[in-house]
Amino acid sequence: MKYAVVKLFFKIGDKSKISNYRPISILSSFIKVLEKVMYNQLQEHLNKYSILAEEVFGFRADSTTNKAIYKLINETLDALNSKFIVGGIFFNLEKAFDCLNHSILLSKLQFYGVNGKAKTWFESYLNNRYTRVQISDIGLNQMSFSAWEKITDGVPQESVLGPLLFLIYVNDLPKNIIDKTVTVLFTDDTSIIVESPNSKDFQTNMFTAFTCVNKWFKVNLLSINGDKTHYIQFKTKTSPHLI
Image (cartoon, rainbow, N blue to C red; front, side, top):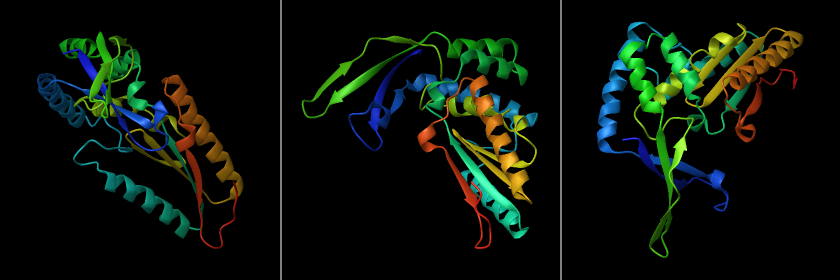
């Protein structure tokens, strides 16, 4: 139950670079059934007490990709129609699911009311997990494996519980950002929209928002993927170019 073989699936780019492969954990059917039971109970708890922030999207039936996109577009257009200066920072995290700190995650679960036997179960679920990597040579029809290694951080890729645990991990991020922003979190992407009536306030708020998010990531032991993190200023033909 706590041992998983990881297969690497090529995404895009140079095939000789390991960063261009996505690791997928091959989990047993039994553990997935058990995870689904805990997923349903945890989801019921989160819904009952309205724990997940409204800025958090994804992995839920009532919080889809379309809703996240609509919120970003609608807020941007409203600000432009009001003649505000509008810009966005779009953060992407480096191997987010693999880097979740177990101690931080368990403390957040406890903060949100997961205590007693439920907390003990999640401690057991996260701790003492082992993995090894399978490498396949299709041409030679051969497979090789690495040695088993203990996992100290992260949640299994392709697990049932992993995505929901990630949402819980980042759930407090919006509260740590200044009020004059619109925040949308979708899986490991964090989008921050800043709008201000004048250039001075806009630049101040943009810098402050970036600083707050970057600080939160560092405190929670997550790393920004610089290659996939971008700044965009949204403007009409008459809008000034600022940054």
